[in-house]
Each structure stands twice: as structure tokens, then as C-alpha cells.
Amino acid sequence: MIYERSSALFAKAEQVIPGGVNSPVRAFKAVGGTPIFVKEAKGAYLYDEDGNTLIDYINSWGPMILGHAYEPVVNAVIDKARKGTSFGMPTEIETQIAELAVSMVPNIDKIRFVNSGTEACMSAVRLARGYTGKDKIIKFAGCYHGHSDSFLIQAGSGAVTFGSPNSPGVTEGTAKDTLLAKYNDIKNVEALIEANKGEIACIIIEPVAGNMGCIPPKNNFLQHLRDVCDANNILLIFDEVMTGFRLAKGGAQELYNVKADIVCFGKVIGGGLPVGAFAANNAIMNHLAPLGPVYQAGTLSGNPLAMAAGLAMLTELNNDKEIFNRLAEKTEYLHKGIAKVLANHNITHTINRVGSMISVHFDESEVVDFDTAANGNNEMFKTFFHGMLNNGIYIAPSAFETWFISDALSYDDLDNTIAACNAVFK
Ligand SMILES: *Cc1c(COP(=O)(O)O)cnc(C)c1O
Image (cartoon, rainbow, N blue to C red):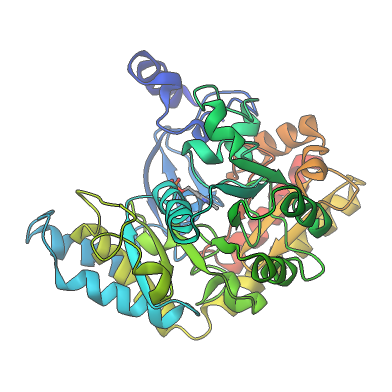
């Protein structure tokens, strides 16, 4: 395919926007070529500025779980917009979405809305520090929790793709309070806790990692974390920005039956508008201003358009009893189809999948943490990415990204995707 118009638009963008993009993962740095400019999207399809139709497996990096321009969400936003787009005063819809979220997610009493997943995780860690009176945090190599300073230490997909695992601009003082652990390695976590006795406020984790490809927790890893947190007076934060309202109504807490102390949300909870949130029980949440001493605020937090989109999205997910099974079945179908094609062509691969998250690794060993994820054959991934694109399939332009399955994908779309994969390696 020829992307003349996208290339021209990108050249213009580069003059006034650093790298031509407002978030680095959108650039095609890891795979080569120039980013595709999208004009509009509906359901499972992207329509680009060059007149191509693409089947979308990124879905805005997760939020569009029911497909693009989903009517109930679009209508809710339009109705709200006509009544004013921001007030900086309380509105009833904030309570409505909060009630619904609290009813869907286990172990939370209260939820605070912010404008991004980054803000949610940043605020959750501040709250954990304020609540416990301790400074240090543990994060896992390859996990991404947004771009606030404490988290830019081996931070997964975006940062890894661009070769800056530890970002300049993060002070040593901040970095020293972030301890780095290995995903799926409880012994490593226990050793860190032992070496920093009484100093650790919280452990933050993606309960299913999605920013180094999709990596499931193994051997009751989440329950073991719960146990070491309880034994050491440490709060366990589940960053469910990707997994929340995607793996189950109650996210990974429900799927794995493990309780987190604080849960972070983003992506699906905003229905495609800029929303994040963090939630916990009353004792923890009552530490937040204006009730408690931990400060957190936002001019546009709980914005009516964002709340309308989020409420419409959560309502659909809550009312459709089969949605999460249906998504998991579609994802399994795709997994099996692609695995068969790759095996037929003798392509070394590992495919990881949980619910509607899936990633294809060109690596024969099991992919269980950042090191094994980084082992994959990147040249093979580039061939795969551009080959799929030439066949009308849009996957993320980095080997470190998860694909997000939307319910708008039909089995014909999945069959076409599997056929495209076959065409790439034929
Ligand atoms: C996307 C993501 C974030 C950051 O959310 P933004 O809305 O991009 O700031 C945080 N944590 C996880 C697990 C994510 O996938």
C-alpha cells in the first residue's frame, strides 16, 4: 500500500509537534516507515487518510472494547455536550458512574476520577505513601504505569521501544525510591522487601502485564504478592488501566480472586474520552483531600462529557452478561488460527493470551517477564507488522504491545486476519 497522504500529513506534523506525534508509541520508530493518519473509524474498522480500510487490533490502545463510534457512547456524549462541557462544580452523573463502578469492582467503596491512567497511578502511589507514612515503592521491570517520574524506571513498551528505559529528567532522588523487581518472581520481591525493611509503602503491578506484550501472572504470583504485602504492612496496588472492565466486570481482581488495596483505572472506563480513576476502601480513600491530608485535584476531573462516555460504556458492559466470554472466545479463535498458520510455515513463536488481550512473540521460549519478552526476533516482527498492514490488518507498531480484541470484530474479520497472516509468510 502507498501512504502518500499520510506521509505528507506526517511531514507537516513533524514541523510543529515533536516527532510528529502526541504520544511516542504512535510513531513507527520500531518498525520503520511513517505512521498512518486515521480519518475516521466505525466498529472494527479504521478508515485512513489514504483511502484504505484496516481491521483494528489496537482499538485506541484498549478503550474501544465495543468497537469505534459505538452508538450509545456517541449519543451520550452528544446529548451532554449540548448542555455544557465543563462547570468545575459537582454534577449528578459523577455519582452515577461512581455507583456503577463500585458495584462492578470487588473490594472498593469509593472512587476518584481523574483525566488519564498516568494521573490515576501517580495519585494512587501518593495516597499509598500518605496512608502508610513510608516512601519507597516496588514496581516490576517491563510494567508501565504512565509517565510520571517515579514510574519511568524500566517502564515497558513505549520507553523500551525508544531505548530510554530510564528517562533523563527523572532525578536520582525520585529514582532511588522506586525499587525494581522481576515479574513473576516472588523470591526477588521478598529479597527487596527484606533489604528495605519497614520502608516500602506499596507494590504496584499490572496484574496481567500488557506493556511488554501480554504476560499473565504465573504460579499464584498475585496471591503471593498479597501475602507478602499483608505480612509487611505494604499496600498492593493493581494498575488495572488496561485490564479493568476488560478481563471481567471486576477486572483482574475478579478473574484471579485476589484483593488489591488500591485499584487504578483508565482506558475502557472513559469509553474513548480522557478518563482515569483510582479506588479503594473507605479507610484508604478517606485519606484524600478534602476529607484527609493527601492532596489530589483536577480542573476537568469528572468532566461531564467524559463521565457520559464512561457511564454509557460501563452500562453496556454491565448489562451484557456474555460480553467477557464472547471476547475471550473470539481471542482464542484468533490465537488458534494464527498459531496454526505460523506452525505451518515453521515460524518460531510463542503466543500469550488472557481474555481479550493477546500478543505474538517471535521467540520459542516461554515469555514470562521483561527479559524473556525482550528476547524476541525483532526483524521477524517488522516483517510481520508490515506484511499484516499490507493485507489490511492494523496491529501495534512494536513487538512489546498487546493486541486488544473488540466485540465489533466478526468471525469473518478474524478469518480475514488469519488469512492475512498466511499471506505474509507464504
Ligand atoms: C495506558 C496505561 C497507563 C497510562 O494511562 P494513560 O491514560 O496513557 O496516561 C497506565 N498503566 C497501564 C497499565 C496502562 O496500560
